[in-house]
Image 1 (cartoon, rainbow over the protein chains, first blue to last red):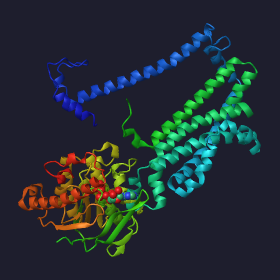
Image 2 (cartoon, chains in turn cyan, blue; image 1 turned 180 degrees about the vertical axis):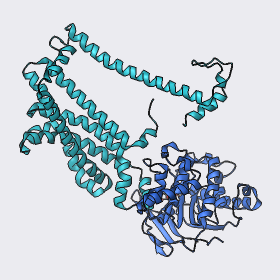
Image 3 (tube, helix red, strand yellow; image 1 turned 30 degrees about the horizontal axis):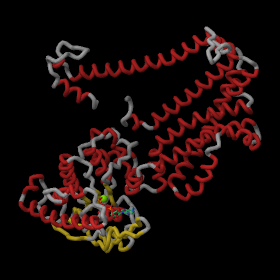
Image 4 (cartoon, chains in turn blue, orange; image 1 turned 90 degrees about the horizontal axis):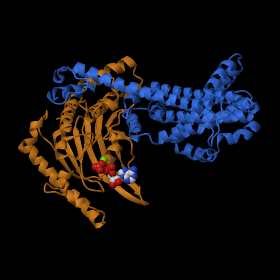
Length: 305
Length: 288
Ligand SMILES: Nc1ncnc2c1ncn2[C@@H]1O[C@H](COP(=O)(O)OP(=O)(O)OP(=O)(O)O)[C@@H](O)[C@H]1O
Ligand SMILES: [Mg+2]
């Protein structure tokens, strides 16, 4: 609505004799505000369509590169001799779905992610809020966190196997570890950088400490929490796949590694693509949920540049 | 003349002193300040930059504890923030995740007022401020003047006895400022509350106030208390009357003295750095 107004006023002031704009009406000066608004909406839609076209081009380009390299068995420094073609992988996808083995592996990986990532959210967000809000908690917990943080989750695999009673739990633990720190640190950062005037405003509007958490701090750090989730889900997948490859039974990581041991090239590629797709879906879900939870962000500056 | 809200909302600042630590040394920010805001009175606090105006306001708001002395609201010691004192900040302080109406409802929600009742009072207040058609907008979609109007309305929603305002129009352009001043006088007359208003702007303080406290440069003390007996309701045309002009000149002289002494002090410390350029023909007062 805000955009209609400047357009309407510029329509009134448009020079009649000047070079007519491309979607030329008979007389641009006579165009009503409504027509102008419609034209503007079309221009926007065209831009969106153009953007969609580039997306398709990007994906098609990647597929084309893969196809050309594998179809003609290119060999320069890299060797595509053994790499399966897109058609091989597609055929494999159909083939693996004759039994439930593949889909079970996928489901097991997803379940591990949901558990590990879910526990990470449940622990890291409240902990991050407390660390960010209270100096004592920060001084007590941050040094330990800073020591543990640089250890990659994958380096935890042997220790994890020793620590936990079953392989399954240790893999979930690795996944949890991978996403825990990004979520924790982003939440802490969000709380410490929250505009203090908002806290003051809430205080003098009568908010108790508990209400402050619920009504100001949590929504105030929501953007950083979601940044943490976006980073965390990526690290969670990396950690999960590595753990499955090393110690696994079941899971997409295990499926891919097993395919390598069995010299089943098409399954290797299928495993990789599945992992990529799962990661994409997870990031997409987080983005969508973020937009739903933070409707005010849709109006902030910085959408399309 | 302004004791009309049943005698509630009397602010008493008694011999308040504040020290801050700065680079390992104690700095006296405010020294022995006493002032009173009578119920329903509009009082401005004016003085050179860094003299402790915000600090004083923050003490009354309950954000800062004085090192010595005490502050009372209706005879009760102020020790922390509360919804009996509405605060309007210089920076925009609306919650960006709440719509305009939800921002206004915030204080009532904290008190546990049920939703439908909250909505009714928020919409009434927004209507008074001419913002009803923006009730479902987010703060990011508003202009600066609108945001500050919402800020004022939000502070009023819990029916506080006093309103504390720290340069609320400081970030607005001159035209918007004048309009906001008129809106504020209207609101103040309607709600009959006590206001403590911090400003840099001499005309603004005269236009709005019943009483103006002029503060000295750091350490901040009360230099003068000036009664403004211009008739109410105030109108923009009044700013050219002889009484108004005379008050302006008096205040300007008082503040120029303080600004010069503040700068003199800095000059001796060798910390002036190009500041002198701003002392133009209209004097330091104009810079402020
Ligand atoms: N938290 C603090 N720690 C240390 N010094 C402080 C603190 N708050 C304020 N001061 C000092 O106290 C003095 C008064 O500050 P205050 O913000 O109250 O001034 P002010 O009159 O509001 O100034 P301005 O008009 O520029 O807003 C200043 O010299 C400032 O440096
Ligand atoms: Mg200040």
